[in-house]
Length: 388
Ligand code: CAA
Image (tube, rainbow, N blue to C red; front, side, top):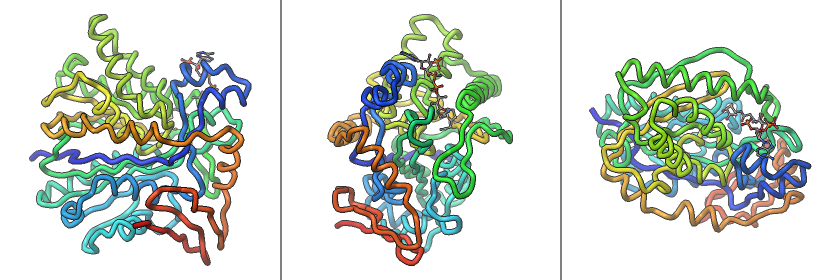
């Protein structure tokens, strides 16, 4: 039975900060952020957006009324959830007007959450091939102002509609994965900002990729040459480039250049948004599909998912005829180009305002043009607004 990605939706805020300006404000060479980390712009998420509103915006871009009627499972991957008990999926089901005869819940394993959702959806769709599953990956990446992690922040959401007859990419059956209890990145209860051992986390990411790619190739009698492109979880885009470089000596210099060009297409959107945590790998896939001119139906794409702590997975997909439609869609590039730039001082103010919490809170949402906004908290209950 086929199974895979039928539609992909992406959303982030309408605001960004320029990485050259952030570098100057932090007394760093702009080259460190632009080239050393591979980031040009960083999404600034205002207090009126959270994982729920971002996920709703991403899903709203792709779901038709017919899709809504076919969805039987909603899995919300996030590591920046908004409640210790209630799933973000519950708010989303309501705000999107999904039917009530569905299962909806949240999963957590750092940036691996959406990939975990795909694994669960695979089994669900095998049993219910007439249904669809909605998997969300939505997060706001926060390390703190003036920390070394700061230039690798960002935020946004990916919505994946999964189906038994996917239009964009069928997912193959042989993923390889690995889990190990380590402390490379985590966020203790009660803290809004992640704790990270930055260099160690990058080293473990690379180690996981090298092991899993080798394991996949061995199990499937495959080599890099069998792939049209590799896409990576991109906490910052240089991270994926480092991973790609570990396998390029397997191919000729001309072929290595080809994979590097595919990688440039795959990091274009992430370079201008920053880290989305759970959604980053899938934003990179969208970026590849919309920015590469060197893909064809039937091509095989490798995907590397990494969630600190740490869970890794390498899996593969085959491009389906409907990918041409998403490939020619310029909407994401236009949306990113139309965002509003804020100064470093404005970004810092928005950052501090986002950390406010309490049993009762009023959020300034009037200047946020998004369809879904977080308006505040009343008696410990989060309030959302859907603009028609
Ligand atoms: N021009 C060009 N390049 C320059 C430069 C310049 N003027 N100045 C410095 N650089 C280069 C450096 O040589 C370095 O490149 P290499 O990594 O290729 O050696 C790069 O810029 C970064 O410089 P530093 O290593 O000095 O940067 P740093 O110590 O300030 O921190 C970081 C970098 C560790 C990634 C930090 O931003 C961080 O901790 N980020 C959060 C953690 C993270 O993203 N980890 C990734 C793996 S974990 C994961 O994937 C899960 C997740 O989503 C978090």
